[in-house]
Image (cartoon, rainbow, N blue to C red; front, side, top):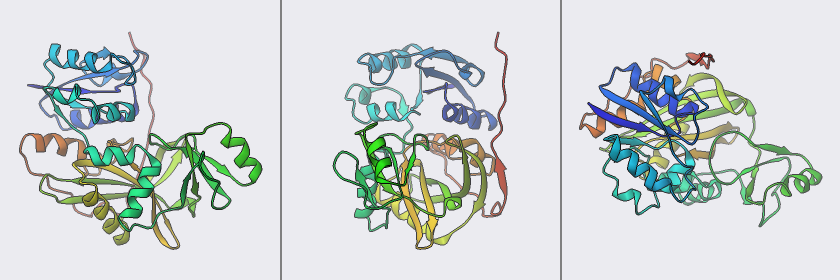
Length: 311
């Protein structure tokens, strides 16, 4: 039985990854790592291990030691901070385990929202205007301001006036101003998977956000969105799974973010048959991937919450 290490197991994404694997009764032993123990990760894996933060000088040695001592066969890095280290570390490049990521190009572009915007423009994809807070003023108001690095839908501020710009600019110099895309109820999160043979699958979810997390989705299919996402996947040499965040405006779809990792919607789309976590593992075993049919279009799903008392 092979052993998989899922990092950042205290978070919802890693727990979703573990849930997807378990639901298929795949023959793997799952272990997790995180920077603290005050979470429910132990409910999803057989063992949890404490590791330093990714920006700590001892992180790489700690991970390599864990891989060796636990006979880890596959590592799934989940957090953006860890992904940034994995694609730049010479030490981790010597890791004996197989690593599941979306590929270096996707990670480098996706972790930096300004690079994302520039890369998309280079592909000929129409994007919202985006400028660095420390280098420029907004191209128009209202607009949004958000962190330049990382991904997710938290800490996003809508600015309506120059007073707002001045106030929020002082809070963060490493942020971006970006065009406010409307309408807000046309936000789509798109799961994109590219196989080792170069075949691309696209799964589109019209979504509602609550507290920065997807709380409701409706499965849709826009040909314009599908063609755009396939184009991006091929241009970035996607290897496995990524998420593309966009809004469908009156001028067509506009991508505002690329998440170079599995997503908080992993369990939702897995239940719909878009099983990107399991496909990644299947391909490591030399198995072929078959994308699901379109018979889920129009169906809805919601996120639910639970609580567990721990011993």
